[in-house]
Image (cartoon, rainbow, N blue to C red):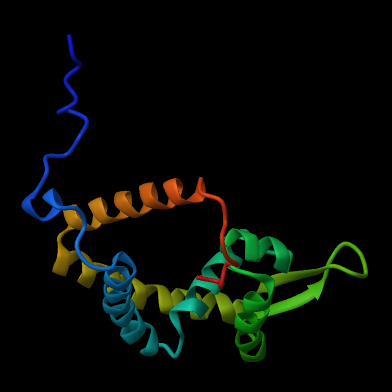
Length: 166
């Protein structure tokens, strides 16, 4: 007796019958540009880039934190983190202070940085709600699940190139 696998496999759609069509990388980049544009427009209203908002959010949540640990948490290389931290330090939103020993440093969020992050969070939420409205909450949740599953599957593959901070 053969096991019924229909409950575990999605039904083949006409587009999938012959296999995936087009370049997956190109399609993902198209989607990312479209989604990023919505967030970029909102973040610009409070003079932040989305990468800066993400950094402020991570430092608020995880800090004080060593830059190397922050880079790992954000899945970016150390040089990219250093480059992205510089404008936040210059603006007075984060500081890089001495750590437990003379060689270590810790990234701290300042009160001004907390205020900037709170202001930016309102704009981030506006972008998120607009995206949820445009795509529908169910589609957004399905997209999140698909991305999470795909990342987990790809993490199991051997690394073939350096992480470029994406």
